[in-house]
Length: 251
Image (cartoon, rainbow, N blue to C red; front, side):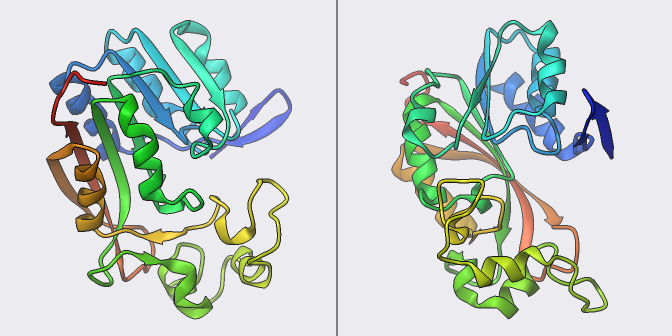
């Protein structure tokens, strides 16, 4: 739904129960007292961060996004232990603003990350934490991770939300713009359209995600398949993961 705040309409989605349950289980199991929630504002307005802040004795929390919504800011008044960090999550100056934390939350983010790519994002934040809590749309269309734009426009439309509806009718003209302007600079980001994070960029396999975490000394502790992503997407499922650093307290 849309909410009006300070004369501006902002999207406000409810917390998804599966994602909320993951926060509760991970933070209780691994005694999380500090965290950074990456890309946490669009749509949910840092809702999962606020769930954690309300439910646990959190000492420090960081919400990181390119744009901090007014709804998220308004909700922060009761939480002086929360800090907003504005910037691209994959830029080094953004990463440098995040000190060591117990947990990094990556909800619906890795599928969007290009230049740096999704696995490079993991490399950048791995030294900052001992726990990754990941919920991502995972690729089941092949055994290899796939850059979606490389599939071509027709397959991109078939495999990403907003491409076509159940009747096969086009519903999102942004994808036309994407393929018309692939190598042009995006007006909102310091990237080309090809690499902009407001488009789906990757189909990431479970095996490749686990391998990227493993090379950073994180082991898979928990995983669950939450089923198909919304809409008629043939090759994506929602999967949840907890990855724990092998040397748990070394960060």
